[in-house]
Amino acid sequence: MIKGLPQKDAYEAVLHDAMAVDSLDPAGVYFGTRSGKLFASTDAGKSWSALLEGLPPIVAVKTARKGA
Image (cartoon, rainbow, N blue to C red; front, top):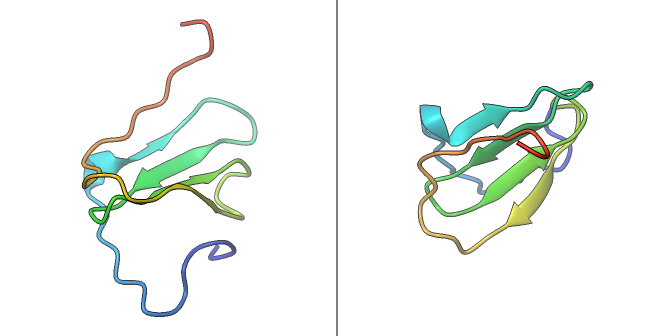
């Protein structure tokens, strides 16, 4: 789905290790771009939110369990 993702003039690159999925139900999906933007979905990718911008290029994204 594209709800919440940039649609116009959006030329983003996402590296393989810059996407992660958590173990919740529904799954959270997260990805970072080479231009330093971090996006998240808390409904298994049906809708997205931009969490942060202006970061260095994001080359890896990981998830962790709460309390781990």
